[in-house]
Length: 230
Image (cartoon, rainbow, N blue to C red; front, side, top):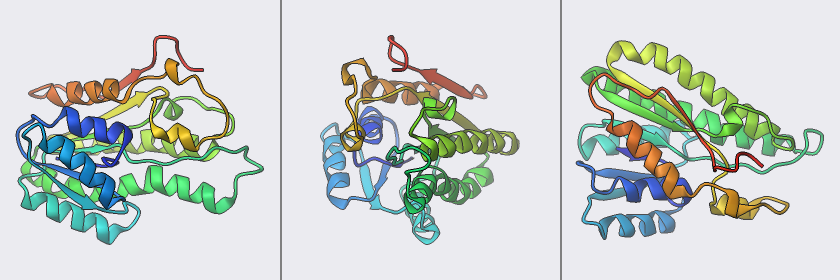
């Protein structure tokens, strides 16, 4: 199983939650040091985990990631939780930053999905879990690039689901509300982080959708803090 964004936040929480699952976890992210920290926390639970630093927007690196994962065992699931974002009004967001946010949150997922789909389709078994966001369902002011990418990711996952079911491959989109991770440290403004989901709660949802056996599949799952969006 590949888990992207595993160096921190939701990705790290997912890796820790799935540590006891059968098979090896391949932890992917951009930071060697932080991936090593996640690996150590997973290994402390007695699980097998390896790391592979990778920029998902670089196709060659993505193909190397999938090839490496296949050496660890048949690739049965990919949890795509990597993403970036920095808000600004439409008229103030530099085009290079806008493009970077879309590439990180949409194009990178496309590259990995395309590379991983081939071995899954050949075995007629697999599961893609896209950790999207409620920003993939509604708009938030000051977040045009992030919202556009997340809406695009939902459309991509929906299309993939239609195509991949012929190969026995499942596709789930998870839409968590604001989640208390260090992502918010980089955003301007003040936020009620006590009214956010915890990464561990999102990890619970990932484990749930992966645990549904047979031909059942959770296609979409929306989760928020009890207080709603803010």
